[in-house]
Structures are given as structure tokens and as C-alpha cells.
Amino acid sequence: MTPRPRSWRDLVRAADAWVQERVDLSGIREVIRHKVVPVHRHTLWYYFGGMTLFLFGIQVCTGILLLLYYRPSAEEAYESVQFIMTEVQFGWLIRSIHSWSANLMIATLMIHLFSVYFLQAYRKPRELTWVSGMFLFGLALTFGFSGYLLPWNELAYFATKVGTDVAGQVPLVGPLLTRVLRGGEDVTGATLSRFYGIHVAILPAFTTAILGVHLFLVQQQGMSVPPAIERSGRPVPSMPFVPNFLLRDLVGWLSALAVLGGLAAYFPWELGVKADPFAPAPAGIRPEWYFMYMFQTLKYLPAKIGPVDGEMVGVMGFGLGGLFLLLVPFLDRRSARGEKSPLFFWIGVGIVTYMVVLSALGYLAPGGK
Amino acid sequence: METLAQSRRRFVNWLMGTGFGAMAVWMLYPVVRYLVPPQSGEPRVANVTLPWKPVEIKANSGRIFRFGSQPGILVKTPAGELRAFSAVCTHLNCTVQYRDDRQDIWCACHNGVYDLNGKNISGPPPRPLEPYKVFVKGDQIVVSRGA
Image 1 (cartoon, rainbow over the protein chains, first blue to last red):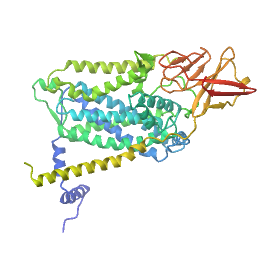
Image 2 (image 1 turned 30 degrees about the horizontal axis):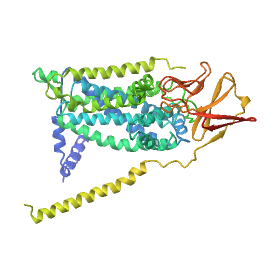
Image 3 (image 1 turned 120 degrees about the horizontal axis):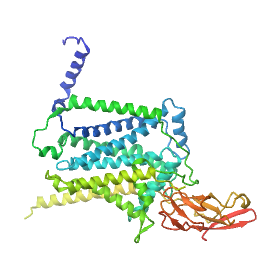
Image 4 (image 1 turned 90 degrees about the vertical axis):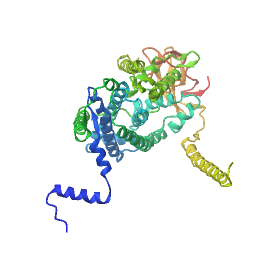
């Protein structure tokens, strides 16, 4: 007969032994024991991937809660969000956290993306990690775009009209793409149903799969050490992932949670005016901040550039920009060999500058009326 | 030289490959067709009678009306003439509005401007607004396609 466990510690040990007798977890334990994080002057940037993952977790949890009251139809969507915000206990908190966390997540994702870019962590052998990360970025933007429509308010209605019309500028398949996205010729309740399905089922499924690949690759290859530090030839010190790095992560996550709580309490997310397909687009209309630079570009482009519509040029430009970022590990041959790669550094600076300047203009330039 | 066994194996591989390929197409085709929404059964509207009387509409103002499933805009010029256009901006589909202070038709989304003939005069719109015909019959305003 086994001796009776005396304390909770013994109990855990007994449970652990019970599991270990049935399932061999020694491989996972080894991985956890040996995982380390390099320590150098750029270590700070390693935290942003984990932060994005944490905020994604918040999105999943609050999103599931919102599902319990939300109704995806043109007649009821706005009212159901209003109900969540005013009648449901803590509904305002859950919805505001969902909206704020979405925005913070895009922000930390962008910081993560560009820090990886500037530290050239995409170089061989991490090309696939970068590519999977770019896909996740695309999914996150699609999450943002589709979720924006769900409250069915005026701003979202016109943002969706514009956004889906932009998709129509894609050569050959554009008009079909717009119809498939809208679920018809116009933005209607059918669009809302479709965006709802995309937002709560299709995107989560793809994200789960690609996120799995992304995390697996990060796990397999470990953290990239910036080439400049690698070239110095000195040995790079490291810290164990568990518990040293994880506890630092945790501090960041708790801070993020505090910031989210504060934002939701002091700046609850607005609902705006219910969408009316037969009202003019309101003055001062603009998209979420992470689409602002595109929006502003579309304002500046003339009706025609040569024989082509201006907006088509804009859409193609953004498409090529995205393609460049997606393929950068394969284009940047010098960093793949561990050499300095000033050209790609300056291209990156150019992209960030463009996004920042155009976004700033979007907020500062007069709206027109 | 290919043996009979190898040749048979090649045949079976080909059979299975094409079989699975055909099965994939057979399963995907309905899914793809399902994703493309059906053409709406609504007939294309040729004309509408607006819910306002001509005398209700002030000079130098504009109103949005429902033209089938699309918005239209009725404008009364400062000179008192009634004109109607599609209210769908030719740039990216937003709904335009009348600006009485500047006496033009304006799209708030990307700052596109049209004059009172519906012609695109500034900003990104590539084409004029589609013009409609306006008839005044007694105290009714009827708008029809094609001006």
C-alpha cells in the first residue's frame, strides 16, 4: 500500500507520478529545462511576440463572451451591442477590452514585426518563421477589418463599403472578390453574416493552425541573435526561459492587463450611430489607425495616373509592398550570409517612415467640410 | 526495362492520383459555387416617386432618397432647379452629400467633390455621378434612370 500523501506538495507529486506512469512527458520536460533566451542589448524586443500572443488570448476569451449576447443581423446587431454595453453586467467592460485589446495587439504585432525586420531575424534558417508571421499579420488585419463591421454602425458601414470596393480593384478577379466578400452587390445584412462567420470561425481556424506552426518553429530554432552581436565573436550570455524569462513576460502581461482595464474604464469604446444605407457618409469618417496610411494615400491619389485609375495604382502599390515584406528573407541574400545589409535596413526605414507620416497626416490634415 | 509489376504500380498510382484529384475537384466545386452569392432577384428599378413635395424642398439643399437598393441624391440648385444623381461616389462607393456652404456635392470618405451637374471636379473620383431624370407632376417628384 502506498503511504497517504501528507501535504498538497505530496499530492501534486503523486498526481505527477500517476500521469508519468501512463504518459511519457520527459521530452517536454527536457525542452522546458533547456530552453534559453540570449541576453544582449536587444533582448527587450523578444518580449513583443509573447505580448502579442497574450493579447490574442484576451481576444479569444472576451470574443467568446461577446458571442453569448451578440446577434449577427442588420436588424439586431447594433441593438445587441447596445444591450451588451448598457444592460449586461460588465458588458461594457468585456466589449471595451475586446476593442482596446484588438488595437493594442495590432500595435505590439507591428512592433514585433518591425523589430524582427530590423534585427534581420528573418534570415536563414528562420525564413518560414517570418513567412508564417506575415500570414498571421494578414490574419490579424482581417480580424480587425471584419470585426469592425460587426456593431453595424455608420463608420463601420462606410469603412466596409470602401474596403470591399478596394478589393474590387484587384485585376481580373476584383469584381467577383467584392461580390464574394459582400455576399451580394452591396454592403447589406448578408455582408454582416459573412463577416461574422469569417470573424468567429474561419479566421480563428486559420490563426490556430498558423500560430501553431509559428510557435513550433520558434521553439525548434530558438531565438535569433542579431547579426551585429553574432559578428562581434564574443559568447552571448543567456537566461533560462523557465522561470527567468517567463516571469519577466508575466510582468509585461500583468501590466498590459492593467493598461487594458484602465483604458476600458476611462475610455469605453464608443458604439456610434446605427448604420443607415440611405444616409450620406458622415464628415470626419476614417478607418482604424492601422489602415490610416492606406486611407490617406487613397485621398491623395489623383483620379487617373496615366491610363490607370489612381486607386488601382494605390492598391497595387500596397499589394507589392506586402509581397516585398512577405518575401524579404529570400530577397535579402547578404543577411542570409550573415553580412551587413544596409539596403534592406533603409528600405525598412522607408516603409516605417511612410506609414508614420501618412498616418499622422490622416489625423492632422483637415477633413474637408 | 520496366517490369510488369512496375508498370502495374505506375498504372495504379496514376489511377489513384487522378481519382483523388477528381474527388478533390468534385468536393471543392460546390463549395466554391456556394461562396459566390446568388444574383439578387430584385428587378432593376426604372423610376421612383419621392416621398416629398416639390414645395417642401428648399433651394440650395440636397436629400438622399432610395432608388431601388441604391441611394440617390436630389439637389435643388440655388436657382431652384431640381436635379437627381446616383449618390454612390464613383471613387470607392461611399454615399455623397450636398454641401450648402460650397454649393457642391461632396463625399466625406476621401474628399471627392462634384459640381451640381454631377461632374467630378476635385479629389479622387474618376467619373461623374450617374445622372437621373427628374419629373415634377403636380405635387409629385418622379426620378427615373437615364438623363
